Length: 190
Image 1 (cartoon, rainbow, N blue to C red):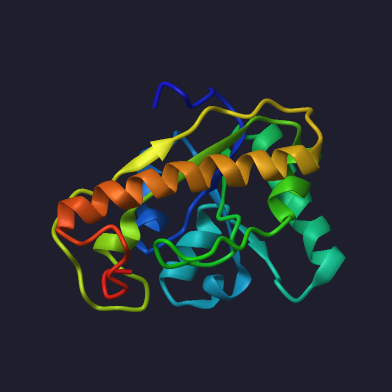
Image 2 (cartoon, rainbow, N blue to C red):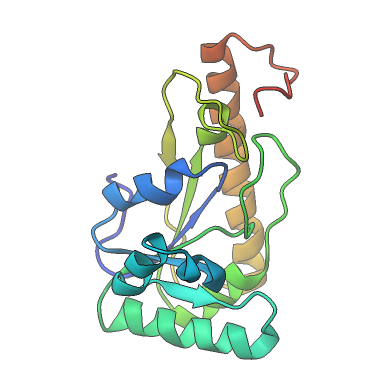
């Protein structure tokens, strides 16, 4: 936690399960998620996302949707000093899956002018996506070194991906050892 800068920032986290959707609330002072707008239509859960001031994105909205997301995120960061949490791959991915980062995180970084914080985790080993199974063990969240504002967004995009993937790979190996899985990849765990 000592790596978390004070005030507004962008948190770019790996997304492997439903767990981090809730758990990251406990790590940051005043987090604000960027989420697909359809989640706001879910009864009760959606009401809380609206009340919590989350930033919706219409994935099919193109440049207009990106501009609206940036405007809302800018307000949350600058006026309210919140931490914007974004899952740069856009959706949950199985542990060890080929990375698929979307460029929106780099665009957000260039627009907001605040630090970017890489975050990795291994939650998908214990609480897999689209599965009812929950495995006992320790979910680990690792916070990388903050990337300062003002750098070239293409460089930052590559640096972010390298940082998160290196941390995620290490956490994946540690988690597999804890679960007694071979390092080669028992896909039933992912």
